[in-house]
Image (cartoon, rainbow, N blue to C red; front, top):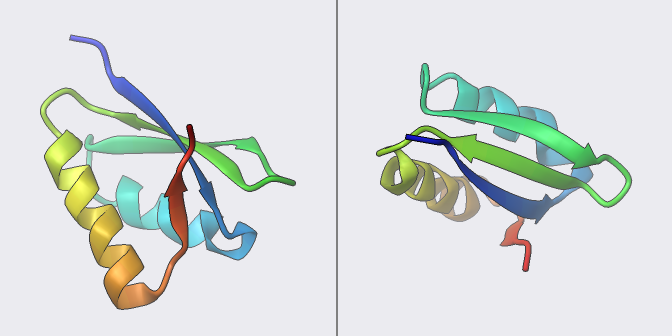
Length: 72
């Protein structure tokens, strides 16, 4: 199975925190910055981990106040 790729717009100051948080779950997802000026990132999610990634992102928004917007 192939990884799932999703792009997001985030606050520039949150990119590193988001990357460290998601990548700390070994093998779940990898974050790469597509455009640092727009703060556009891509999250490559391992097959079967999309639900967990969604939960982590929702928690970061709710509990940490991060601004994470799904890119259209």
